Length: 298
Image 1 (cartoon, rainbow, N blue to C red):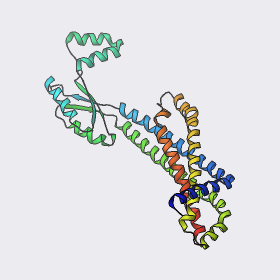
Image 2 (cartoon, rainbow, N blue to C red; image 1 turned 120 degrees about the vertical axis):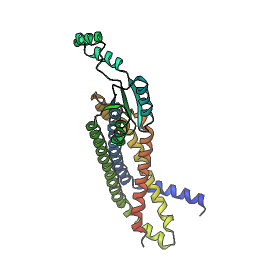
Image 3 (cartoon, one colour; image 1 turned 90 degrees about the horizontal axis):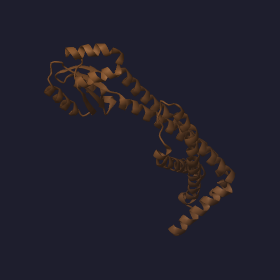
């Protein structure tokens, strides 16, 4: 049989197998849709949690105070040293006069105290820098580097918050992706056993084809096509359902919590579409390939 004719035969037979066992095929599709939908929802929740942790991390600032004996030129040089540190993301210089004005606006009830200090020309504040970091995994190392810059008198950090954020981030990723991995294995197991029941109908046909000399791949390909159809259909249905589940359930729940920022579906649709279709095809093809092996051992 020519290659083109063979391919047409595989597609035709795969579709016939799918349609002939439509109840079992639809059952397989339903199971796979449920598993993909749960995995997709977990992935979206993990992505939203990670996004919010990143936002909090990005707002975390380290403040360093310049030695009061350092002149303006030396204060500027410290800024140059900070920008040379690879893990520093942003550097903002805050002169002590600007900091003094900021304190005046924040504590208007202490106006008399600030007036007395201004009359005496006494500004108790120091020039300072506010910096943020690119990678919080290098937080301690970066703080140590900052502390060792000459004329840096003090570094104020929020190390406890950083440690908590990193810990929560790791836990969310481990739990989320572990659950998704287990769901993938569970869906594969269920699909294998569901398809196995459908394959039982064709055991005699497979044995006859083996006896007349058909190759394993000639027998196997139509069943793999059937599995691919199951996976493709499940992936498309799951993607459509995920759109509504996310926009009308998960997203609305996240937005109701005013402290959280939600990822719009438009930002992740391509990843989800590829994941659902690719995951569905993978499970469908693997499930079919695994189950057909038993009946090829004649």
